[in-house]
Length: 103
Figure 1 (tube, rainbow, N blue to C red):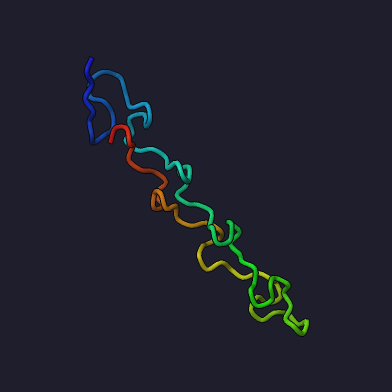
Figure 2: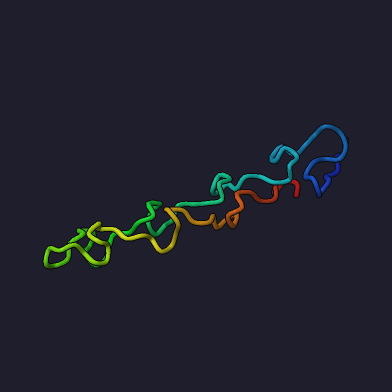
């Protein structure tokens, strides 16, 4: 039989056959982020922190005192992300996109 695609739902109109890729939902999980909508920050490798450049991560200044930039911790918060993750560039943070097979 010939099946026509119903573009609004992503499923076939006649018969019981649905799109195998999306199960008739019309949307699929993003392959890049697995549906989470976020990705690890490449600046900090997902840690949310960067090595302090003022003390090279030692936490001490040249006189042995606590570094004023990182308060002696040796790391500073990454300014590119929130807690190590960024919006997935593939799905713009949605986690899903229109099924390429039927939408």
